[in-house]
Image (cartoon, rainbow, N blue to C red; front, side, top):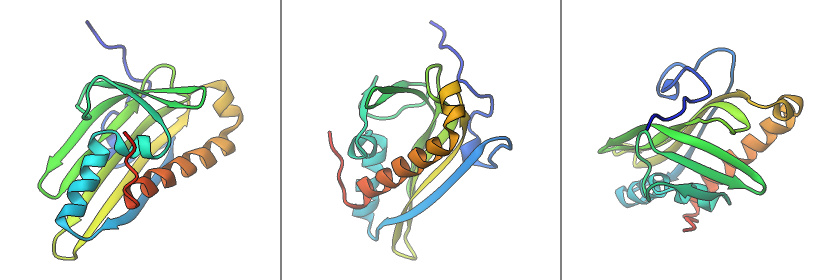
Length: 167
């Protein structure tokens, strides 16, 4: 069975140069200092714990984010369908990116990558996104949409910082 296409063409662009014509988000936060902190943060990101900790409901095919798999988040009455477009699984970097599917209020991509700097004893969560309105009502309320995106991004970071990984 073929998957329906994503709602944007710049698939994987959160891993490099962000495309023009979109709103860009780049947030970084220190979420720990040790290998154990890195492992906990990476696990929270990869198992959807960060999203649950931010207050979203998660329906996903598996317990762990995998390239090509679909997920749908619930944010009150709003459903947010996405597809994992790449996964990072390296000794000092872990995370993934997802892209928007039909029915998502916006078009674009968002990545969640945890980095461990062994020399600096610092664990960072980096959230990178590019998006533009995908529905008439988001286009109409674009300033509110940016506020909501910023609010959710801060909730993601907070969930990892305080290790609030709701299941």
